[in-house]
Image 1: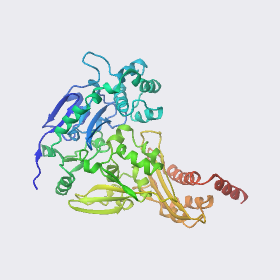
Image 2: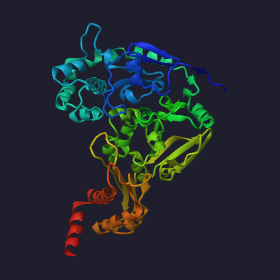
Image 3: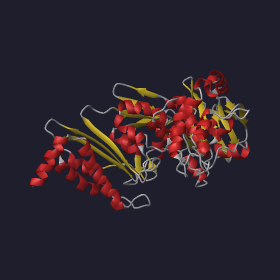
Image 4: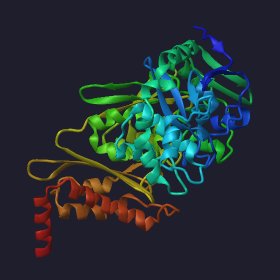
Amino acid sequence: MAVDIRNTVRFLLNDRLVELQAVSPVRTLLDFLRLDRELRGTKEGCAEGDCGACTVLVGRLLGGRLKYEAVNACIRFVGSLDGCHVVTVDALATPGGLLHPVQQAMVDTHATQCGFCTPGFVMSLYGLWMENPKPSVEEIETALQGNLCRCTGYAAIMRAAEAISSIGDLGKDPLVADREAICRELAALRDGKRVVVGEEPERFILPASVDDLAKLYAAEPNATIVAGATDVGLWVTKFMRDISPVIHLAHLEELRRVDVGASGMTLGAGVSYSEAYPFIIAHVPQLRELWNRIGGRQVRNMGTVGGNIANGSPIGDTPPALIALGASVTLRKNEQRRVMLLEHFFIEYGKQDRQPGEFVESLHIPFLADDARYAVYKVTKRLDEDISAVCGAFRVSVDDTGRVSDAVIVFGGMAGTPKRASNAEAALTGRGWNEAGIEHAMKALAADYTPLSDWRASADYRLLVAKNLLRRFYLETSSAEQVRLDRTVKMAV
């Protein structure tokens, strides 16, 4: 069946419709705002989605509901914005110059110093305010993980966040009061057509559906698939890579579904970290801390779990955790699908078991057995917004006799891929779940990994951390009485 094609990308920018017929596949939203539209309130700080100075809000209809999220304009491609509403700091004040409540709160609490980062903080707080008018301190801190203030004015910014609702009425905010009208405008932009903009050598495509995506990618296996662009964006801004032709996925609702069954949940490859979060913490609460340390809020709003897997990075945050849960991945090429355990997807550094024209369609995560002990630990140079030096995931079952009946140990950052520690697992299995068994397994880790030294950590440090994380897992998942007995026996020996 023929697919209707449109040759323009259309979106709302503040209060105006934008329709572009000639735009590069690597044109970032930040450059479009500052250079093409002269909206210079949005700043460039790092150009890699790290500092938050470029934060804007992007609203999209999903399941008939309009939601605005803070994103990094520096790594968001204009081509991905079809059918969206982009809101920048330039549009917040009224035509008469009256400040928006978020801006006024920043003024009243003296929450700006040099001012460079201020627009990004304003937009992140605006997104939080719409989501939660009276956030807790923890919720504010989480919302601001992706915003860096070089003047260290965080205390005043926190006070500003707490003061917004005392200054303004959320119900009167334009994005809330005019929500129905905005929804109608965005719905009118969704015509179900395939979008193709540009010609060789610079071209990007938005498939009309997942079936259309499968056909397109099978025909053009050298195309770059872009979901959240939290990694691909850096290919462009830092490495100046040519990624054309580009196939965008963010608009495909079929890939953004989460289905929960009796034995597990299935995430479409386009589900963002933020969209997955409520399901993850409801069914695997042990992942709460890890999930909240994946980038900043802007990265979690853009980045996808499927993209983190397809990227194949040895230091990706989710693969170790998901491998330890026994997750499986569904790959699709045209009309054919195949399912494999996630641990088998990663072959070697930079190489995954994915054929040309084949893409990650979904991920299935089984629920933990009642007797399973499970934890994930991420070790980084700084707490928030940092890439792992080592990430360890552990799942152990202990039988009625106190012996380990099943053990899964997975590390990221220790090899060219996320990798199970088969020797350490064998050393644990059948032994008592005690200090002696843990020490035996810790020694076996040296046979499982030969880590590299880089600027994040030395090889010796990584191996020591891996051993200590295994011990930590034992201590945190054992009763205090068991640990006391183990130590008493050790001292007696």
